[in-house]
Length: 354
Image (cartoon, rainbow, N blue to C red):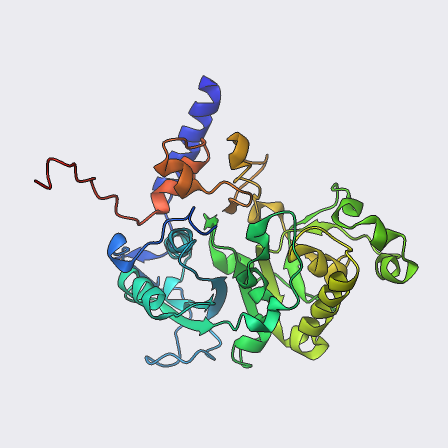
C-alpha cells in the first residue's frame, strides 16, 4: 500500500511540474454549481511556433483551429471546467483550441460560468433539442445512461458549421495531460469515420442480447468484421465523412429496432458499436485510460492501466469531485484535483449566523 501511494505521489508531482509549450500568463444526488463557485483560470497563450489565426475576430472556419466538442450541463459542470483547464494547460497552442459545448437546458448561466472562468476561451454553446431523441431512447441498466444529452454526440455533425470537417469529442469526466494537438493530428484513412482506442480482448457478445444474436438479419451486420469494443467518450470524428454517409440516421435505425426488439441493455454505446464496429481507426490506449470512476456503490477504486498516459477518464459511477468532497477519494482522484477550479468556501457555523 505504501508503495502504491508513493507511485501515485510521484506521478502527481510529474503532472504538476512538467513544462508545456504554452506560455502562462442523478436528480437530487448532484450538486449544481454557479459561476460564483469557480476561480478564474490562468491565462494560457500560444508559443511562437503556433499557427497564426487568420483574423483577430476569429472565424469558426479558421483552418488553424483545433475543434473540441463536449456536452455541458449543471450536473457535470465541475468536471467540464476541469477538463477544459487540463486541455489548455497541456496543449502547445491553447489559443488555437475552439470548444463546442452542447447543452439541453437554458444556456445562459452555463455560458456565463465558462466565460467568467476562462475569459479568453474561444467557444460556442449549442442548445440540443431533447425531443429529437427522447422517442428513440430505451431504458437501460443504469438510469444515468438514459439521459437525452448522452445521445447528443450522434448529432454533432449536424449541429456544427459545415466548414468544420473534424472534431474531437470528449466526455466531461476526463483530464488531458498531453498536447491535444497530437490527438487532433491522428489520421483517419479510407472509410474510417471515427478514431478511438479499441479493446479487442472484451467479449463483444455480452453487449447484445440473445434476441440479437439469434436473429440472422441483425447479427449479419457484424459478420466478417473484427469488431472491438471502443469507448465513445473519446473520439476523433471526421464530420465530412459522417455527413456524406448520413451516420446519424444509421444510428437512429438501430435505436428504432431496439424500441421494438430489445437487442442490447446499455444506453448509447451499442448502436455506435453496430454502426462502427470493425471499422474504427485504432488510437493508442494512452488516449483513454477509462474506467477510473469504478463503482461508487461498493466504493471501488481503480488504478491506472499499465503504460503511458495522455488522457484519464473517470467513466463509471464514481466521479472524482464527489469522492473528494465526501472525503472518500480514491488515489487516482488526486490526479484530477489539480485541475479543479471550484472554490471550496468554508462552511458557516450556526454561531456565525447569530
